[in-house]
Length: 487
Image 1 (cartoon, rainbow, N blue to C red):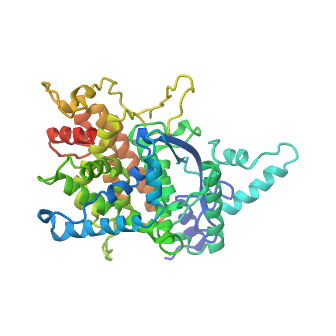
Image 2: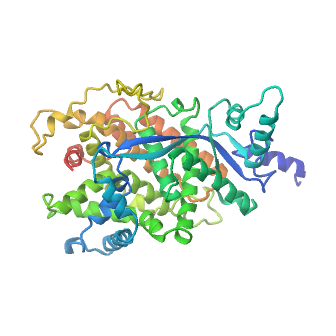
Image 3: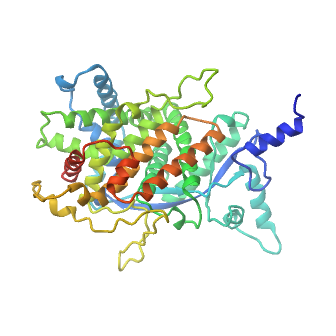
């Protein structure tokens, strides 16, 4: 017996991941209205001396340090293909503004670099409903409110200052003008926050995503900025921001400089080729170009991992008997080369340790006079203590001082964020498919949050390696960490 139409509508409403904070309706009942997420963004400043140089993070320096040709011993079919893609990105950079940016960033190691970082409590609203509510708040004769004072009340009293449009496969009925207007509003808020108009929204979003992942990897409390937001709601934000990044990459290919898209799409391939070259037996670490390449691997690893999952995580072909939905393909780049990405992330841990970096760079200082940072940790983040004295075991000359015992325990605190990040990327690779529907995206955010909670609760480095499914020999992990520290 067929269900009545009203019952089908009620069931569809119950299954929806998002409902507008004003009208309480989602995509099913309002398919032509654009939904957005209330979010909070802030500007962060990271000096180049603390690993904040954009040309290091986005792989510009690494790609330009690739050799002219792949060593013959490595010239296999697949590796040659990865190297070719990396060189294509490097060639695109040679004629772009990236070289001038790199020159500026290398002028002084103390130069500041500016980014935005975004968090969310996961509350949605129709952009049109927000506009109406804003007008009503301002015209209220008894208690007029500003735009974001009223929005904060609708956002479960969590501070917000931006609405990020939910770009997905279900916005096809939304008028193009509504999407363009919402994206223009985002661009305006980002410009006002940074104090300058960004050259590429694609890279703004990619840097934002990287910082959010770093904040999670360091166990920083994401609600310290705005007073709310869980791991699950922020993974939801991350997935929709990745959908937006894919859209910005497509726009860059057609509307902006195509070099921007080539750079981002070829980054992970160039990174994998660089790791293979640096791991080869005949690699000369004393050559200046080789030093730049190894340093580039360490600095670029998180962004390269992110771009690999964003651009090379295709959905598998779905058969009628497939009940799992549009899951990622088993032949995705991350799955095939995850050990090389792990090598890069371990080198990144060593590099950040050698620079004295102990947080994401988004933590607010308590005061200018003290310079101390008030780091609030997630409640489930297990305390490993602060007894990491690994600096004693890697000297400035690069000679490892001998010490009995297991070195990985000495490096545990410095390794912890990047091993956690590896676990997040590995789970993200299993979850992410471009423009997945709202219900699947919501479920994915929950599984990602559960995985991160497991990492937080790990009692020590051995436990964390088990949770992250890292099977690499621990002596090898220590050796790679030290190479990163000396890069």
